[in-house]
Amino acid sequence: MANTLFTEQTLAEQRPILFRYALLQLRDSELADDAVQETLLAALQSSSGFEGKAGLRTWLIGILKHKIADHWRRSAREAVAPVFGGTDEDDGEAEEDDYFMSNGHWIGGPKAWADPEAALKQQEFWTIYEICQTNLPPKMAKVFMLRELVGLEAVEVCRETELSEANYWVTMHRARLRLRECLEIHWFNNTKQEKHHA
Amino acid sequence: MRSCRDISSLVSQGLDKKLSLRERFAVRLHVMMCTRCRNFQTQSQFIRKAARHYTDDLQSRLGKKS
Image 1 (cartoon, rainbow over the protein chains, first blue to last red):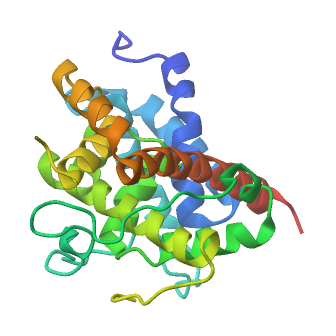
Image 2: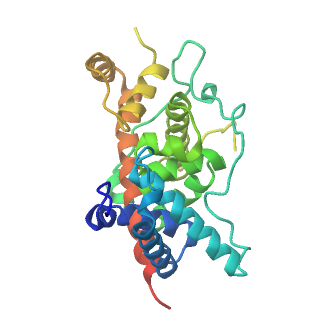
């Protein structure tokens, strides 16, 4: 008898997140759509493989990753670096101490930004945004993107990236500190001051 | 008394999970008095918003057939 762990309906609900995940990797919405389609189909056909332990979405992303890997294998376009390819151990660099003194006070610290809403409408802002996001260390970028672009929950990001919960909080804190600083320097406060890291 | 490092960390965590009552209270109290942590809070929220816009934009950009 068909299992009762998920239905076509609950599968369909996962579609937007799976699509964003695939899109960030494949950079082509048609390809992404295909990969998601194949994933959902495979899920329906092999529902017995789902044990309900890790959560439906985690299971689906596992399948999707295979589909994406298949795509890279089939196509000769290996030159395109997968967005989530980074596996740096970036601890050691980018300590929070770049941002805080030993007593926990800000070094410099966030200034007020003039009219951030207006920035959203400017093409140049998005260029800066993309550069800032891309300049995060690879692992940090992956964590940030899975959370804020794909829209996974924190626990799911931990599973995907094999981070402990504690490391997740530290990583996201740093990612936000870095992005914030980068946007401030390059967009909101273009009259700049000395920076001590690139 | 919690430091700006701790408070900004809580602010960041608060975007990804529900903080305890005590934590939320500590953040609110601190942010009332500390401009920089307040800026961090609004800017982190802004970054979330920007990330969503970016994703939407990406979807429509990469969706265009050439």
